[in-house]
Length: 166
Figure 1 (cartoon, rainbow, N blue to C red):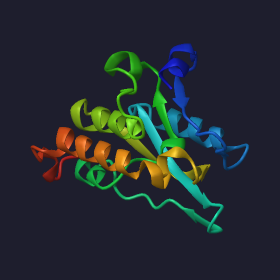
Figure 2 (figure 1 turned 90 degrees about the vertical axis):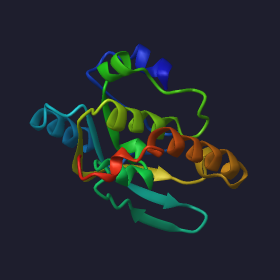
Figure 3 (figure 1 turned 45 degrees about the vertical axis):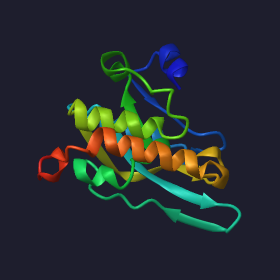
């Protein structure tokens, strides 16, 4: 992903996983509209449709107020529905490649908690996410748990996020 950012030329970047896709041909238009209306934000996130082919389950992600720092303890923004201002990667660094599964979670925590980068929630479904990839594979659950515990220790051990500050 860092190589993709380095080769990108636009103002914003978004990352789709292999097999995932935008929910419609107009998804990016709604994202661009949001970026024009909320110029002060540097990260824009929407919702995803979650598809589990094995179980035949389709559901939309339910966003909580994840811009409240304490809520991020419980989960991440939907990565394939998050646009980042490309300059953030130059200003604050890219994805930490030591994280094999949760590099996006680390980036979001770093931007929101450490750097106070403004995030904006778009009230629309942006992309379709299919389960079955490495990030939710059973054989990688120990790696995922280890990385999650490490991130919680790094970003939440001092609990400054308990306040109502956003």
